[in-house]
Amino acid sequence: MRFFASLSLAALAFASLTAVAQAPAAPKAPATPKAQLAPPQGLAAQTPPMGWNSWNYFAERVTDKDIRAAADQLVSTGMKDAGYIYVNIDDTWEGERDANGVLHTNAKFPDMKALADYVHSKGLKIGIYSGPGTKTCGGYAASLGHEEQDAQMYAAWGFDYLKYDLCSFIPDVMEKQAPNDKAEQMRIMEAAYVKMGKALKATGRPIVYSLCQYGWDAPWEWAPALGGNLWRTTGDINPTWDRMYVIASQQEGLQKYSGPGHWNDPDMLEVGNGKLTMAENRTHFSLWALMAAPLLAGNDLTAMKPEVTAILTNRDVIAIDQDRLGKQGSRIYSDGEVEVWTRPLAGGALAVAIVNVADNDRLASHPFHLNLTKLGLHGPQNGKDLWTGKAVTLTDGQPIELPGHDVLLVRIGAPK
Image 1: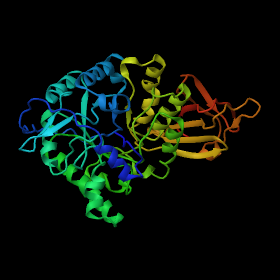
Image 2 (image 1 turned 30 degrees about the vertical axis):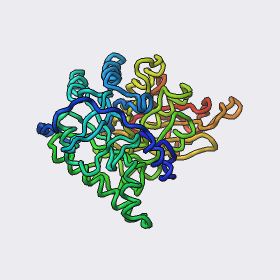
Image 3 (image 1 turned 180 degrees about the horizontal axis):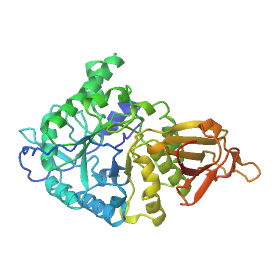
Image 4 (image 1 turned 30 degrees about the horizontal axis):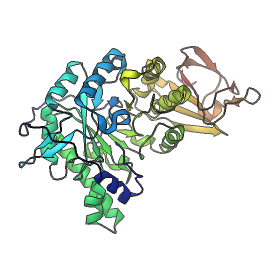
């Protein structure tokens, strides 16, 4: 979910939030049901969550029908078999609270329990959205003062994932309670996420907890202790090369905070959205895999081009993202406008990505020359080009030509 204005301008953001009209309440809804305790399922999010989120394509237009269609498409396109299991509803599902504080859905979502049951019937899991303030980013009812009540409701409906978005909590609580004290504002924010984390745990149902607060106050340092499974590290993504590249660059230094059960989140995928070229889509997906990022698609699954499906379902690249070692990769060195990234993998293997970040193609008269020594490698390295499926050998000083914004992604065996 994204602000309708820059996050750095909180007042403008809030003004735009409150301008959004609230959807009509559904005619009826039951009182908050008691959550059914689920049997323990071990550590949640042992690998980065994979699935689909409604916001990037549908935004406030999303409906029950769209979520059901997305679940169907994850199955029919082969994305489920490739590992995409979460179908996440973002903002604008909420209606009004009744006299007992029960939050009713709006007319777009007449029966959340039935919807969750439908998604589960496909062998998938389902996620929902809220925030710690009075209003969500879209201006709908959020969870302030109703954290335990809402958590129990999500669990009773059968939800498996919660995205918790800061938004109106900034002016409603942080700035109101500590108007001139940024440090205290951050402590107030952290306490709000602690509160919902405890509420989710108290339901007894395993629910993946996604902190969406734009990387403020270094959540990677405190989110794991409160039960956070993933946390945004930056502001919102959009379907442009420049934004995707800036976000990827901002992950530097965060590698040590990522691992099984707790992941840095550079935001949802934009593969297949906007005017991204196929090269840019490949690079986007490659970098997110190298960063052990959650892979939450956000495109229109019902109108997906075959070449986009091929990117999102590339099992070799997904295997990099889902590698059981859980180590986040990093940029090792750059040479002008060419960057080299690596990620250590289980069993001593290594993923190596060479990315041309230039806006123009590298000419054959001046190719990039790979320096294996800078990667800690010596001698020829046999591997597989994960985008062509062909066997390749990387050698020291090897000339490599890449179109602008494209990537060479290779998996090699244990370094010698």
